Length: 287
Image (cartoon, rainbow, N blue to C red; front, top):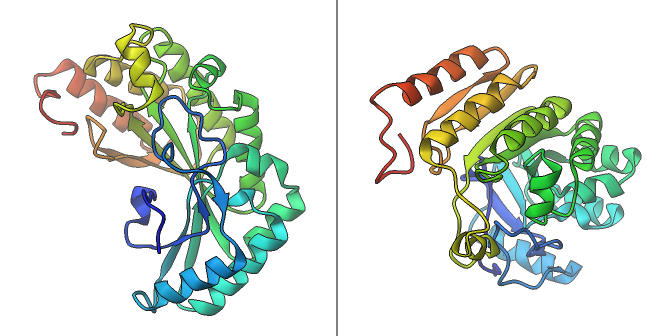
């Protein structure tokens, strides 16, 4: 009863996944291959009820629920509120409901709509910022610019959502390494999300970006350049009580802390690996 492939954030590993939509309505990012094999569509009310009946045969008492696929907030507000009410009624033990959120989907909602959705039970939103650089966002065909990313993030935070942002280190390649680091720091600082995660660019062979690499149009960062970019990004962030994680399997160095409280410690740890003899990325994606 799932349309595969199925994705969720690492922090939702123990969550019940309710598949509300299939695919991604944008689905044009050159670095991403997650939903390229799917045609985007919204599930009907009848399909969703059948789906939830099926889920209940396996998961009766979930504590956390994640709404898939790519951008559930594209639903009309009244339909999403109705769905949230139904899910809460069917799974009364759920303490948290979360979903991915596209920046344009957030921007298209009014402040009142976002507040209503939050009050109806959708607590945590994940948004892939990917990069703060307009040049990198355009190159990767993200479909939004820096200011729209900031606007979306600030609207979500204002509406009361717990908000999680992600940046992909290395997404600007060698040509835009510094700009990617500095502009990404600017965007995350402007949003000041509850959670910020940093992943390293890993290119799927089937993605459009892989073609760019084979044609010499895009040059991946070396492991040392990844560390330099991460250092530059963290040094230029100004955040308050933001939980930071760089502990995805793609990361070379496993990092965790609270920004800005732990910024100096996190930066010094990266510099220690960069300048010492303990940084051995070959053969492993993480330390």
